[in-house]
Structure formats: structure tokens, C-alpha cells
Image (cartoon, rainbow, N blue to C red):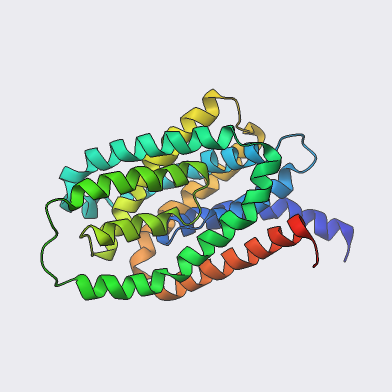
Length: 267
């Protein structure tokens, strides 16, 4: 294939991946399946490590979470009393995850990356049975009084994962919400976006404070992810959730396979 054509493809890969990642994060999660590999490729030879790439990826995708919150404002009114405790839990967990990422050596993170991607892809496969289970709970008895306590505790743990890596975190949040009594898919998506905005937001602040963000890549990723996130949120109710989750899971398995091959080579 012509080398100039390959060069153009490499230049377009990161902008295209950022736009689609913003949309995927809003509808089903998993935007990092697209944006992180593209960013690692774009940063190759720059001297920055894989941890800096992950930090930059989180910072760049964060504006997409904020624009999505605005689009889901009507669904959030139902759970207004839960927003503050959930936000605090997301803040604590997200900061812990960000700290863990920055104390992880670059080589160790690259070794963990295929497994993290595989875990996230498996989580997306499980999203379909979760959806059926949520539907079966829709008319069940009201949630127990202690469910909010476990919701807060669980949100700290999930947000720690989101601050560290993030891919598949949206599914984990939705599973946690389902266990604790929230069964409306649009309300779940709204709460997922809020908690992600907070947990990623505090991680973003930590990464910036520690000087880990590669600003030369940030601007284009942030702008395009924000556009993708807002557009996806506006039209998410028209999307077939079942097929979208299958597509995201497929992207995740392919991406994980790619990094496994690079990490371990042919058997």
C-alpha cells in the first residue's frame, strides 16, 4: 500500500477515534477501546510513556461527559437526592484510581493493558443478560432502605477503576445501579454520565497537577469527543442498545487481541 496513503490514515485515526469515543461513552461506554490505541500510536516516538497516554486519554474524553450531563438533565431530576452522595463517592474513588495509575510503571501498565481491555470487553458481553435481569426487576418490590448505602460503597470501588482505566466502567456503574434498585435505562444512563464526569474529572485534575497530560494531542481529542458525546446523548434513545453493546464488545475484543499479540507475540 502507498506510504503516503498510510500516513494520511495515521493522521486521521486519532481525530476519528476521538469523535466516535465521545459518542460511545455516552451511549454504552467503551470509548477508550478506540481512542487509547489511536493515541498510543500517535504518541509513538514522542518519548512519553503509556501511563501518560492513558492520562491524556482520560483528560481528552472528559468534556464529552460534561456535554452529556446537560443532555440528560430531565432524567436526573428523578434522582436529585442521590446526586450529592453519588458525586462524593465518585470523587473519592476517581482520585484513588488516578493516584494508582501514576504510581504504575509504564512497562507494568502495558503488560496490564491487554487484560484490562479483555475485562472491559467481557463486561460488555454481560450487558445483555444484565438488561434482561433489569427488565425482570422493573415491577419488583421497592428497594431496601440499605440499598443506597451499598450503592455509595460500590460507587467508590467502581470509580476507582474508572479513574485508573475506565473502559467498561459504564457497564459496572449500570450493574451497580440495577442491583440497588434503579431499573429505568435512561435514568441509569443519566446517573452513569454524572458519576463518570465526577470520577474522571478528579482524575483529570490529578493528572494535570502531576504534569502527565500531553497537551499537543489533547485539544483535538477533547473537542471531537465533546461533539460526539453531545450528539450521541441527543439521539441515544433512537439507538438499538442491544446491537450497540454487541458492537462495542466486538471492538473491545479486537483491541484486546491486538495488544495481546504485541505483548506476547505469536505463540
